[in-house]
Image (spheres, rainbow, N blue to C red):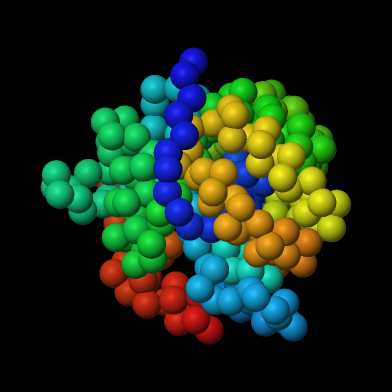
Length: 284
């Protein structure tokens, strides 16, 4: 397997830990999936550390691939707000329609032809926020993340028959299976929300002073095993903000599922969602 590293210059890092994408949701979160009428609470702004500003906000696309079907793909945008000590978990279905220079395509089609970087650009247009960084994980990368986070506990849905229903501590292979399971009764809509809630849950439980102290080592480990355009320069530029967000951002992740509609096998994000995202969660 060959690994690539891009070159760019913008903050980052939370990336590698947040990438917890793909994995773990509490029973309460699973209830939220079915009810789906609770508004996520707005992030509260706490006392700000000197030198950490709103200009350090940034978004990172996380992509996970474990096969050739659309359901073998998982995508989520993590919007990091060190200034607010908060993050947003924004799951993106591979069946989401995007408008690009090549016309209208789904996220899965864009990914298969042009890769995670092209998906980041396409999703930027749909969300109305710049998504300039990406991180692509395979099974080995997921295993490394699982180790860095010290394991994962997830709420196993009843449809997944390989494990009994309920809260379970799972290994990285089981995490992958749960995340890419194609037979949930709620279909792709449920799977997308499950991934978003998994990311939210992992950030809220995994962030803390201990992880913040291990950030540099974690970055070096993950940068060696994944395809990303996040560079060592990005990490150095963002180190203070990253350590601050990880140390203080525990329980500060908000799930934001893009509103939209299904038409057959494709999902279209509402045009109004761009304004809602900014006004309610980013600027609010």
